[in-house]
Length: 435
Image (cartoon, rainbow, N blue to C red; front, side, top):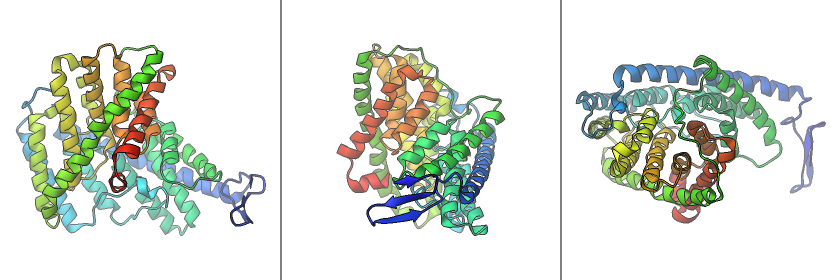
C-alpha cells in the first residue's frame, strides 16, 4: 500500500512501513530531485544535439552522397583508404586510453556510468560514425549523457537516489531528441531492467519531463521538424483489415532469421578477431580495411543506413529481390564486424535499414501485402529480435513510416512476436545475455 500524501508504502514481505519521498509531490526532497532531473535532462539533450551536429558535419565532409547509389561496386576507391585510416586512429585510441563500448542499457538499473572512459569512448564513437561504419549514435549519445550525469552527481556529492534519477533523466533527454519521441523513451525506461514498484512512477514522471525537454531541444534546433536522422518514408496509406493482424504475426516470425544473423556473424568475427584483441591498432586497422572494401562493393550500406532507407524502398523494383536480400545481409555483417573490430556505436539504426530492405523485399514478392504494412512490421521486428525494447522500437518505427494510429497495431504485434520468438524459443540464456 502506498500513500502519496504521507509518502510511505507498506512492505508486506517484511511487515514494515517504509517512509519515502520517491513520489511525494508535497515533499521538498522530491522537488529537489525533480529540479536536478530536469537540469540533467537539459544537459543530456544539449550534449546529444552537439554530438549529432558534429556527426552530420563530419559525414557531410568525408562521406557525402555515397549512399545515393545502390549499384554494386560503384563506391569510390578512397572510401577504403578513409575507413582504414579511421580504423588506425580508433586502434590508437584503444591502445592509449580506456575507451570501450559502455553498456548504457545495462546501466539503467544502477543509474551510473563510469565517467572516466567516457571522453575517449565518445571520441572513438564519433570517429566511427563519421568514418562511415555501420553504427548508430544511440550508444554514443547515451554514453555522453550518462557519463556527464554520473560525473556531475559525483562532483556534487548527491545521494544515490538523486544520482540514479539524474542518470535516467539525462539519457532520456538525449534519446527522446535523437528518436524524436518522448513516448519511446518512456517505453524504454519501462522495458529495461527496473524495480517493479508504484514508486518508480515518481522517477518516470521526472524522466518523462526530461524527455520532453530533450525532444524540444532537437525539435526547435531542426526548424520544428522531426529529427533528420529519421527520414520519414511515407509509403502509400493502407486501411487496416483483419488479415493484416495475421500477416503481422508472420512478418514478425520472418524477421527472426534475419536478426539471428547478428548472433551468427558475431560468433564468426569473434573467432577471426580474437587473436588480434591484444593488438588493438592492428585489429581496428584491419577491420577498417575489410569494412571499407565491403562499402566499396556495396556503397548503399555505408553509415547509419537511415539515408539509404528511402532509396531502397522507393527503388525496390529496380533493385530487385536478390540485391535487397544481399543489402540486408551485408548490413548485418558490417554492423557486427564494426562492433567486433573495436569501433563504437549502437545497433538500432543499422537494423532499421535491414528491416526496410526486408519490408521492401516482401512487398516486391507479395504485392498483396501493403508496402506500409510490410515496411512498418519489418523495420521494427528486425531490431526487436535483437534489442530488448520491442514497444519502444514500435513507437520509433511508427514515426519513421508515418503510420496512422489506427493502422499501428500490426507494427506493435510484429515487434512483440519477433522479440518473444527470439528470446523464448530460439536463443539460449547465454546468447540472450550477450545481445
